[in-house]
Image (cartoon, rainbow, N blue to C red; front, side):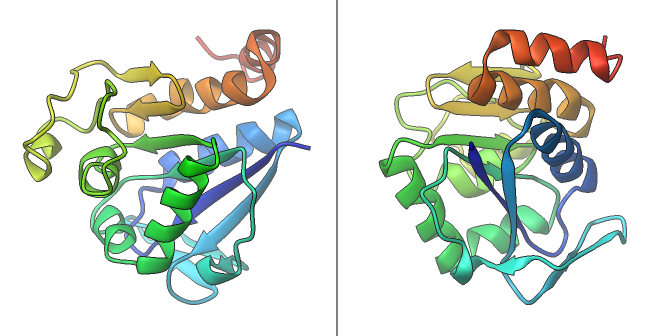
Length: 181
């Protein structure tokens, strides 16, 4: 079974977390929801996710790590040593790292995980990591790095994650099943 880690922190962008999680679970992946502080995380629009495991209790290996954006969610993940450790270790073990919205610039850039890759982020958030030239594309797939620009790209992002873990035919089936464009 494919295994994914979805890291949540207070202030996360709900659609960027829930949509990919839902698609991956529909496809058959185990998705561990790990919060950086306590047993729940409250999104930037007030939706609470309860019953998460603590980031310290997230045990890999993981095939995929997902870092949603939203502010201050991305900053809260960036300031969490256990979250950063989990991301870097998973990357070193060959996991796909998927990040959306503010998180590519706020989380991945400072961790050095954008080096040698192409990536995108939410328009204007590139200033959080000016050493990198972000693409203006909605979705960028570059090897084991998948990035997307924001909430409006959550569907494409989620389908790209399904494709990365389960292949193109699984992603096309999912696209049909959910009536995606």
